[in-house]
Amino acid sequence: MINVGLIGYGKYGKKYFKGIINDKKFKIIKILRKKNLKSKLFTNNKKKFFSIKQIDLYIIATPATTHFEYLDIIMKKNKNVIVEKPLVKTKEEFVKFTNNLKKFKKTILINHTDLYFKTLIKLKEKIKIIGTIKSVILTYGKKDPYFFNNIKVSSDLPYYEWLSHPLAIINNFFKGFKFTKIIKDKQILKGKLIIQNLKIILTGKKFNIKIFFSNNYKHKKRNLIIKGSKGSLVFKGYDNYKGYLLKKNKKINLTSKSENPIQNLLDNFKTKLDQKKVKDDRKIICQTTKELLDISRKIE
Image (cartoon, rainbow, N blue to C red; front, side, top):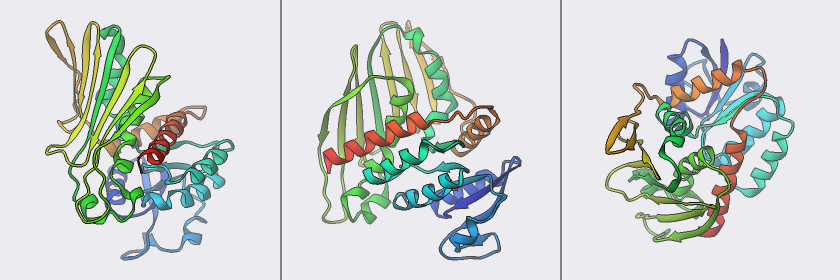
């Protein structure tokens, strides 16, 4: 049994709660939240919460501005942790995090959802079949009422919440790419209507990667297209997580039968916990966070 301390009980906290109570290998010991303490399961006392010895895993599902505060406590306690993306909000927090990471001996995962989609894992396994890669295009975004109504400062712009997904995919699939161009279309901070369109180009030795992001798409987009000399790989995240191998005018279905983002993440944690050595995604976590902070400095 993996005993869990859940931090936050908002939109994502409730998703984690539902996933945990439906998994027999996890048990919620206590939930830390500020208000609405409806049962003994909840507390707003941080000191008492972090003094509970039987907690094996902490899950941070609070706003990103609070992540480092909790990460700092948990990592110094040397406890397993899952944290919602983005990891942190500032370069200073990231430097402190990487310093803590050097001594950290437990498993840390960030909810880069796409890394754990079974369909995307299948696509990665087939990448050699499509021959020499010619191009990679990722298109991410959706209309989200929250961003239209709640943005107050530039660090709250929607790219910070969403761009970590395509960046994590790139860092999982490919190596050796550098940002060469970031094109910013619209960015309005005065008034309620915030439209942000980004085009990001990463250059490698043999091919380029393009990321298109917008919080103003008519339809949700979470798409990946990898074109090769002998075929293509396609992922459509908002279309029931469908994946295909296109080769010689044939469409081979690679879609997994079941995709539950939170359950995939919890299953991944269980697998890593069973391994003898500490194996987590810290390289991808650090690279993705560094890139997100670099982009932030260039476009704000």
